[in-house]
Figure: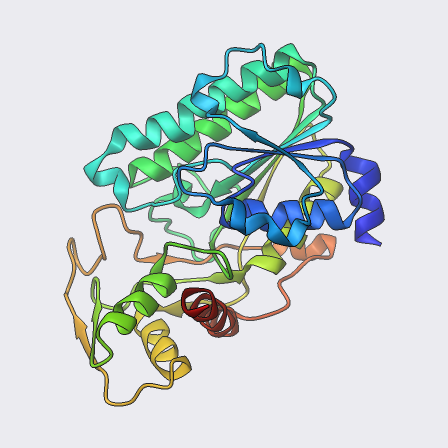
Length: 325
């Protein structure tokens, strides 16, 4: 079983950003697998309420990665670091690119220095499809080049990949990096589904859609993402390896708007399309079309259990429950 493999393979683990959206689901799975877990989070965007499902079976460390100096004693018995901590909002990079640098690049460097000093065996990193920029090949494989991100967020994630690769090759660390598509599900407090639900709660007669509504991407339900994240690390062949983590299909923003309206049981909602910037993007740096080639993981035996549209429907229900509870 996957739970048995998780416990024996990853050993005592540290999850950075473990109180956040994806990180907290990862902690749940580690705890269910009887893994010794340490959760590190500065709670700037995460919340301890996200960890209630783990029943307190973890050690929580409130600390900011940017303030790491290599003397963090809680790292002593850690075997695997799951690096989930990051600035979660892609769109903020245009207004504040320094945030992407500090929260992603600088934090990753501080973490890697500490991993090196404590001789930690492996790191599993949550990267992003935004590293590809506007790929000329759709679906986009892991070996697509050149990588030319169009957002500070994407650039910062690519820089983190490079830093991790260099540390793994120089200091004997095993590295797994997963480039996530759009991950959706419970505990998410940002992104298109969350934004639509919040807008409709405020005004259930009109829904504003950023861009031209034709932005098309794949969406992965968070449980599928977590299983794929572990599967990637368990099945990698090389010292450092990259995996795309997406879905076999995609959907567009206008379809998501229609799904959210339907799931909320609303009628006669006027959808207002803003038109966006730079040819219909929702914001500067927004990639209009992204679909990742996941044949590498599929050939190894993993694929998501639910489609993009079904992931959107399930996530809408969960987010609505959380906002109204």
